[in-house]
Length: 260
Image 1 (tube, one colour):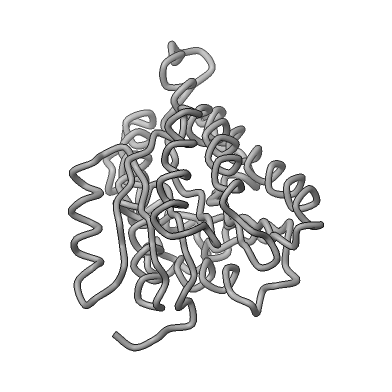
Image 2 (cartoon, rainbow, N blue to C red):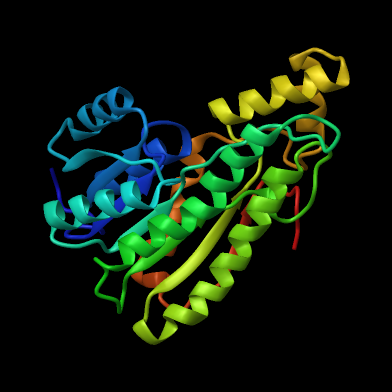
């Protein structure tokens, strides 16, 4: 395998076994990084790591539940021991679902907030113990719904707005260590989570998933959902030396849905 621009860099991707996380893990591995993919599904992680390791890439699975501080600590410690440190953290683990304020949603509310926001604190805190600073990167996966609201998704929108607040505050906190912290805000992406959102929203509106998807695509100026691989170039840029002076930013990648 030829050397890539991330040769020698050590990357931890949470939610790395599928969707956006898998695409980001693949992109880093292709560029020569050692990649730890974390997640709750041990079988899926093992399969993904095996697939991405073909051709000589160093990709290893690490089971983690970011909602649990002990699990996050154990994962970061294991990755740090295996790779000798962590240079780049992509906080990607996420949960979604409708939480209409008139409904019964206590379990789903806790799942969304604990994964998307509390888990962000746990995993970042744990990984920072293995980051030397001066060139280390933290990249958080927010959402275009961190920029505006959607009826019925108050918990998800609140958690993703919180990701931006976390990103901005932590960027200032870690600036003396020369660790940058940024967030990406994807729109509709072809993932299982998006499919869940399409199906739930269609049911709530009493229309078919196909009808809802057509309506959703019509509200994207560029007219379509993205693929996970289209997210990777932005994440790799934020992790690269070229983005050394970019921190505290929340960057949209959404086909034009939000322009602020």
